[in-house]
Length: 85
Image (cartoon, rainbow, N blue to C red; front, side):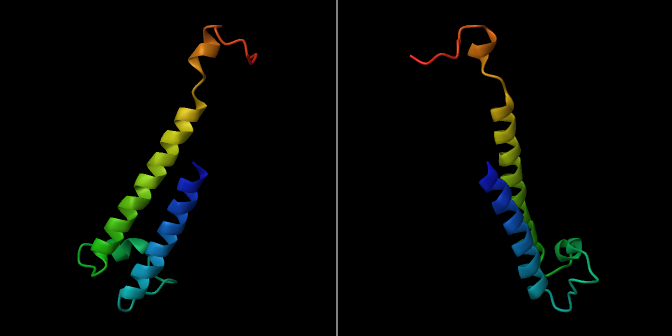
């Protein structure tokens, strides 16, 4: 779960840097990352592909968070005593 979050962050930052370096005249200081995915940008396909992967990793992390936060049904119905055999 934590790995998905870390990998997603690294992928996002790496995508920004890689696309920014491939975009002629791009300034990290004065231009937004969204300009790298503009319809006429030469880096659009790179950004869209990698950011799609980034979003999938984040969704997987959220899914895992939700799955682990659900209570154990056997505990709720009283069949689980918490004692080990």
